[in-house]
Image (cartoon, rainbow, N blue to C red; front, top):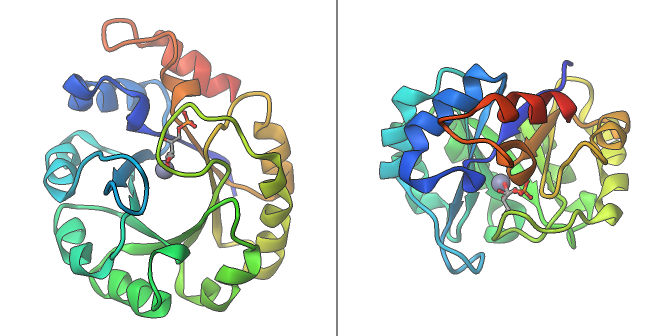
Length: 216
Ligand code: DX5
Ligand code: ZN
């Protein structure tokens, strides 16, 4: 599987999301990662389905929606209708992860399951047959620009072994040129990157986005 870079718009200019997405896709982004936070599951607030609907026409690649919310189930239909391609729920977000992932598939999205740095890989093993993607968090979710947590790396090889070659294994948090190689060698094929992609550029001067993507 070729390695995909999924810039997180959490690090983009919040007043110019449409233009930021078009700029970063033109500079080589493979997917667009949208971080949904509820101020409850994580200690920060971002945006919901209406924002996803507004972003949809600007995304030519893949809208990769990372739900850092609890509960998840009441909002699945709204995010699906808003045009999410991938909908990722946290295994820690509720007691019935099978139900949640089945509901995501039934709503027409590709299901993903995310696990926090403190959650062992074993926690998602029972649902690997229900998902297209596992998101291995390498920071505690809630904010961009945090330090990468090294101890999550062994989970990647374990999940690749269990999930086989077709499972997307996405890494989220603190990804940069200094750890990307090791993550891919461990078995990751999707690298989310916020601050390390948007650093140094802007809608007016997007060339650094491309340089940053190629450096990862
Ligand atoms: C963290 C988010 C990440 C974040 C990554 O809660 O899920 O997607 O935007 O940002 P960086 O790459 O800056 O760590
Ligand atoms: Zn994320």
